Image 1: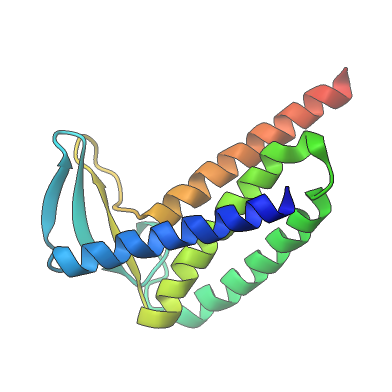
Image 2: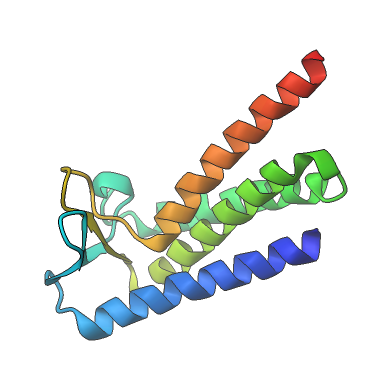
Length: 154
């Protein structure tokens, strides 16, 4: 399972970087193109902060946090590697690692993260594929912890 999750991380980081590259090449900075009419558009933005643009310009802070987070996630990833019942947590960690690496690459290479997905039906911050991986990963870990608690209670 460890090898499959490593491959998944590499594939997800590749998808993230490909999407970001395509947006940079095809949409002017600040430009917008409809993607799913009435639901989502692609908007090319640069974010040198975190979610909702908090802590803008704190590149060193995000670099340190990313390295620490990857170390912690890697530790737990290694701990779960032989536990069949923890596949949900493993998958969640793989998604979180992919999202962290994808945005970390942007910060190191550009000094900012490229964001592009804008939900047009709701006022919500513009995000990217790596952010989505992080979010789904956190949800999967929460579900996995809930399921583990239920198994232990039985």
